[in-house]
Length: 608
Image (cartoon, rainbow, N blue to C red):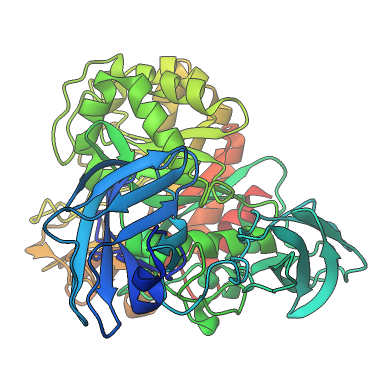
């Protein structure tokens, strides 16, 4: 996408409950006189920074401390300071240094470390007792099970699976709760609930019971929407792809949440979502905005399931909301898109070692915390062996090599796609990279057939930013949708692997006196978030279309001149896409549409 990344800074400092530190000491040093808390201080995707803080809550001094905890397989401490940290398998032990073992009443001390992987600590003890200073080891209730995942959803049934809870005495069984009421008790970590009503929303949680018959806290909820009924969600339109971009930063100033996909009716009319963006840095895929991605707590009215996030649930943020959306619409697929206009500069280093890059991406996309959310990866490199925000000189073969490595790592059961240039001019960006060679490795290309013209040319001439075809007076030959698609097909990219792109926004100038395209201007028109750009939902009433050119619309109101697509022009573009045998359509991005999703509806109807 050519939009700049506008993510607000999301500092995901993760306070874990006092559920997981361990230590060995005499009763006088027991943790009933002390507490320990864990904080994740940093997260860079494949690694993190952590800190434990030990506080003396008793009335006498503590002469030493030992903290213990478990990490899941694949997560480890790589370096530490202010403590001696050792491990035995997945069990980790930290002992004080000679200079920081003594703690007076009320005093505290911290030690830090760097880690690899993505797991969280569990089963923690401090000086042989519980970290919260109240629970006696051996009497602790089980932990919360993992958030259930839903599969095999039918009109009347759903299969639920969840991660096992932990307990010092061992887990005896699990209670399955539907809408807060227990419907089953099982000894395994899966259950198929039957006798449900077609086309109905349900919410499921699970809680564990240990061999001492203590019941632990409930897991986070998963939303399930049974098929059938009068609100059956699967989209229509045969095998055509209908894909929309959801931006992680949209939850801030735009206040556009995953739930809006439901309330607008759009979720029932699309097949795929690209979640934008993950970062590309140090030759690796990395988290874009950790707070938005997996930490922000959504209230009940903001949540897809209608259930508020809790402070201690394993996964929050947009990822959990997408999980709830997929439970409600089981046919919907979600891809994680990496790069974009702002972060494409990182692809040059990634291209130097495609295998290592692919490994990092797979490990991040398939992180156990959200592996069920994503069905593949989208690469938005702007632009290989050409210039975008920065210029790349990786060579014509770099893009093919990168996509080949991603396909090899992700396999045939995951989607691998790319957002690509629509520069169909002679000697343009399509010719700069081996898109034809890479096509064998991708499921499809999102051809960015918009932003051809805009007020970065402040004096004009005014021109539609998303022309379908050429027209008399077009400022640059080859900068049209038809030219781009023709060039991709000419070099050997199958038509069914090409998606037409639609912008849910307009681009505009001010100081314009001429109605028709080709007028002069004095600069960009004012926009809500950025000069020269505005959402369709605003423009449709603030500056209604006054004409059409090259298969798209334009509007002249006062001294402003805008171009944008409307339901009518989208219908025309979809008809053209079908006539060309294209694989479908995609758009940037959901929040530009009206509250009832009229542009998404136009795409859905046009491809059906």
